Length: 135
Image 1 (tube, rainbow, N blue to C red):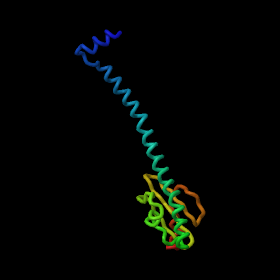
Image 2 (cartoon, helix red, strand yellow; image 1 turned 45 degrees about the vertical axis):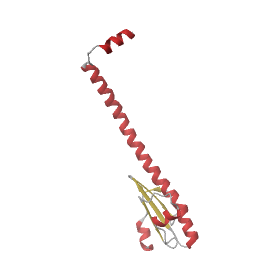
Image 3 (cartoon, helix red, strand yellow; image 1 turned 60 degrees about the vertical axis):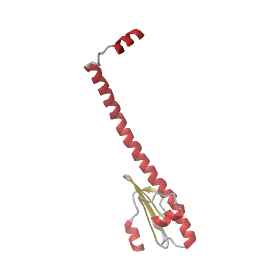
């Protein structure tokens, strides 16, 4: 068996067309399976990052309230000053005297926390109609 392999490698024959087509078909099948899985993983990663960013900003907002007695000064900049690890690229925050809303957009995922409605971190964005009278 080893001698057959040595003879095959020593000869100057190439691969047959059938062998090349089989390899190309196998690679095509592997790519057809791998690409959707990869896209799913990246989507899940964006979702988790967005949700974690909002969850990290909530204690910072509560800390700002403890220091100032109002949520009115809450912005993504003040949240980042309070918690330097926040990713403020997609983070928006707005506050009033009595509540705040923090929203993060990462990829196609949008998560928010609205203290006025007592909502937990959930999909979707801040209800802008509820916040227009607070600005």
